[in-house]
Amino acid sequence: MSNAITYDAARRRITGLAEDGDQDAPVAACPGWTVKDVVAHLAAGLGDFTAGRFEGVRDGSWGERQVADRRDVALRDLFVEWERNFQSSEGVFDSPMGPVLVAEVVSHEHDIRAALGRPGDRDDVAVRAALTRPLQELDRRLRAGGLPPLRVVLEHGERILGEGEPTTTLRVSSFELLRVITGRRSDEQTRALDWSADPGVWLPVLHLFGTRDTPLDE
Image (spheres, helix red, strand yellow):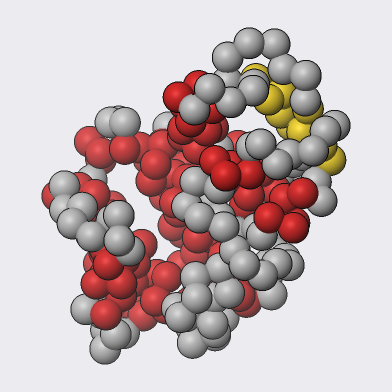
């Protein structure tokens, strides 16, 4: 399945969730944002990806700008903007940015599901697709930092991260691993997973977008 198809399917699921749910519900995974704010970020973010506008990505102002600029925009108008940006972004999904966009939209889908009390699609192929880019980055971090290799056993197979033969194994679902890597779990929650040894050496690099100070229960 192509990145564009996977992304669009998640976009349509999010649209349905936001239409049927409370657009003002706070999203615990994105402190300070509501469901509508997450939609605004996704709609505007896709346009920024397509145009190559990445100012503020490192300090977090990239997403905050997108949300602030659309505070007074109606939810339905955000859907229109998102649709328009999707229709003009086809080439982006065939670039190295494609897997990044898939990881983002699927992660935010589950942020919204948690906010609305509508969990689901955790076993969907989209979750496994969303892991593609984060696992590549995690592998790069282990190699660059000279960290011990790690065997990750998922429901559909295993993956060795880092260089060499691993002596430690993490058994975890694709969904839970995605939530860990994208910063939706605290160190306490990550330690509580099924590790064959103490995970302390990997914790500093395991959360690609920072870690939570408090647990996020979903």
